[in-house]
Length: 169
Image (cartoon, rainbow, N blue to C red; front, side, top):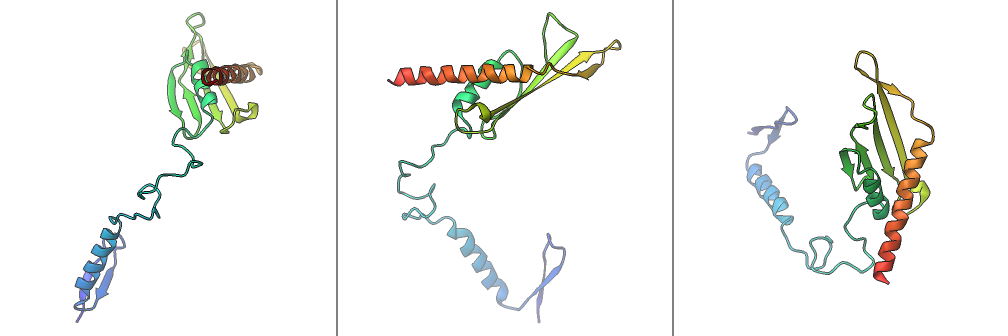
């Protein structure tokens, strides 16, 4: 004699011997409760009672903080669409200069490193012009625009770093 138990996710039928169902239930309960045990040895770092070692990485953003802050400062005039400090991606929304309402710009900044380096930053600028029927059409961006914004961000990041060093010392 066997008991049929339907397994919803698999869509099949599992046959279990009589008397084995309570053993299975007790095993599942034991497995669930084993995650609740406090481990004073610190085998699970965030649950252990030992403090983290001094050289352990600190919680914070996943990229260079000076480049991150400088990017936000430099692009502050543009509306922000999204910002991911752990992935190091900043995406602005379209910005229309009031003096030139027939063109708009959007920027994406990728911070690629945790160090303050020129090659740890990549900026892409997109441009659109309004055509005669009022629709926005992609347009080429001047070749130097991306580099100019990267340089402005790097300059601001260096300023932030220097002011931080001066404040500490």
